[in-house]
Length: 162
View 1 (cartoon, one colour):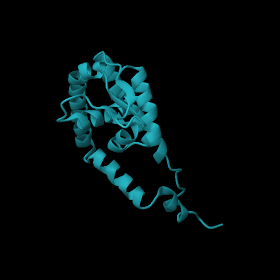
View 2 (spheres, one colour; view 1 turned 60 degrees about the vertical axis):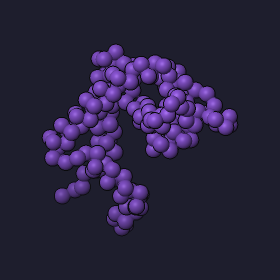
View 3 (tube, one colour; view 1 turned 90 degrees about the vertical axis):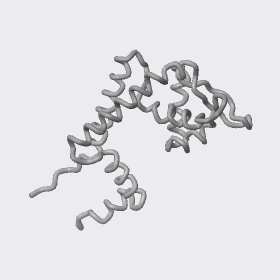
View 4 (cartoon, rainbow, N blue to C red; view 1 turned 180 degrees about the vertical axis):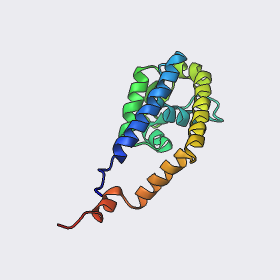
């Protein structure tokens, strides 16, 4: 029996594209020009403001850490969100770093976004039931396992001699 070429990467990309596409379509159906990748940034900013008396700006570096993204990825997404009116860009309190905060547009959309996030969470639980496993837990476990031993290291020991 011959081995099938691994299609894990392609399957993961198809899954991410499918989920993001359908979630983005749900936002559009509600009149929101919002992309799923914006959610982690919005939520990190909302969390930073929790209990604060005034709107709060976070540096790109602090926001990247809070959102679990690389500085580069967060910076690019934050720039796009600023162009689209979701964020306001300025300087951090020390004046040296770029910072962003939620715009008035974002604040006005928060009730609709929060409702959509709840629906997305319920849909994820429904998918979990259909699968018979918790997809988020599986993906989290896979990332932890790769942190412990990278995929490249795993492949090194799998080559056939000759």
